Image (tube, rainbow, N blue to C red; front, side, top):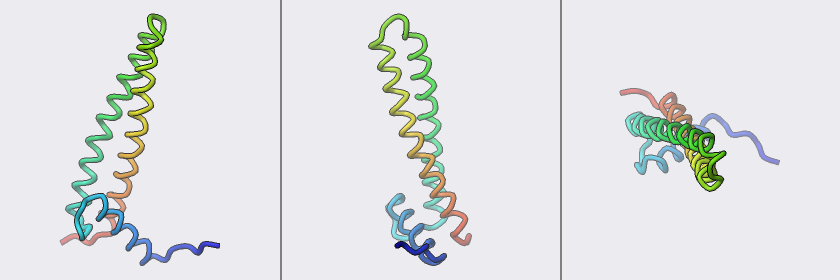
Length: 102
């Protein structure tokens, strides 16, 4: 049976996750902000690709199932990428809330 993490253990876990995301040893607010901005940029591109894949799927569905399949593949890949970057944004925003500002 697993016991819930204490607040200190949660803080240490968040710092470890941010150090893995940023590649730095200290997960300070600057690194968290950089990760947040980068994840936001990639999330927007993923959202654009998702809309583009949906447009390709709907416009080509009656013409060619191969092109519609490519649109579906673009939608699946971009939605997985979007979910990953949204999760990174959530982790970075949590880290920014936990890190004291200088």
